Length: 107
Image (cartoon, rainbow, N blue to C red; front, top):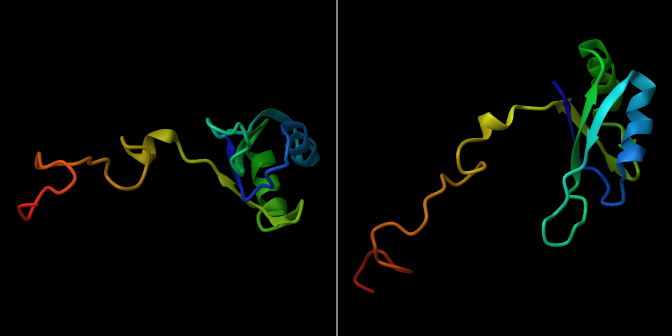
């Protein structure tokens, strides 16, 4: 299992996260998703620790803590499958009704 780390500074690096979380145990992996268009860090990341106890210690110490001018959000990451087939939010419907921009009302 890994940890979700939210509300990160856009200036953060994987090395920054590694050093902070290493204070609570062995860091196995750090991942910082980037925006496809700009290449900029998206403001959240994932950290995988060596044990569940180390993960819990990091959550207890860092959730709500101020770091790089921001209040961190740290919790257990949810599996990707839980977000639904459309990537979360909105239900994934496009158009519908065969009417183009306006599907009802005779436009």
